[in-house]
Amino acid sequence: MARRTIVTARQERLGAELRRLRERSGVSARDAAAAVGRDQAWLSHIEAGNAAVGAERTRALAERYGVQDPALVDALAERAAERSRGWWEKYRGRIGQGALDLAELEWHASSLRSLQIVNVPGLLQTEAYMRSLFAYVVDELRSYDFEMVVTFRMQRREVLGRDNPPTFTSLVHEAALRMRVGDRKVARDQLESLLAASERPGITIQVVPFEAEGFAGMGYSMLYAADRHGFDTVQVDQAHDSSFFHADEQLAKYRNRWSKVERAALGPRATRDFIHRIAREL
Image (cartoon, rainbow, N blue to C red; front, side, top):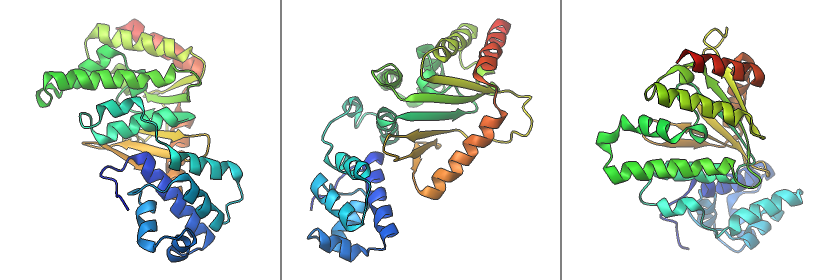
């Protein structure tokens, strides 16, 4: 059995889902592996995302686990059979794995919910804003690395403009809107870009103002991605990379976190008025 040298978040998510289904069914790892003619070590690698399982064996495992939902079985088999290489693959080895996983997560999502406290959401950043943001670490990047990171980030934004894009809902704190990552022009252009985005179908932006009472979520930035098959995943920025969570209890925690912040946010129309006011102050 060939083990993967690189395990993507999407591959790990498939393995975790197969493990979850097995555990819910009460089938032991040994019995599950035997049902498809393999050993327990093989199944352990599959459930960790370290090896490919294939569509046929995925269907056989789902049958052994008593899965009665044909759509779920088809979704699992589809993931197991995937051989397509997304646009992000051309950056492999040149961009961090967490960034590649994030691009893949966004591309396959049916809905995205972004919560940002101190930065404008990545998918809504202008190029000038990105350049100003990364200028803080330019000493750590060679010039061509800098350009590649910006190009990669700009290409990520295309997910919202493609055919059949995911719905995108963003909760943004007022702090992110007032921080001048660049100069006044960069800040003003970024706010105008947010206003334009808020008018696009499928995109909702809501601001949490400083004056909102009961808000204590200063460190709560996250991206909650759902796909049409229910394989939800949460991405959280860490100091040097991204972390991805998909266990049921973790997803429930982040959904609850989102709901708390959403209750403190302005509605979409009030948000547009709010952004207009900040832009006029620049």
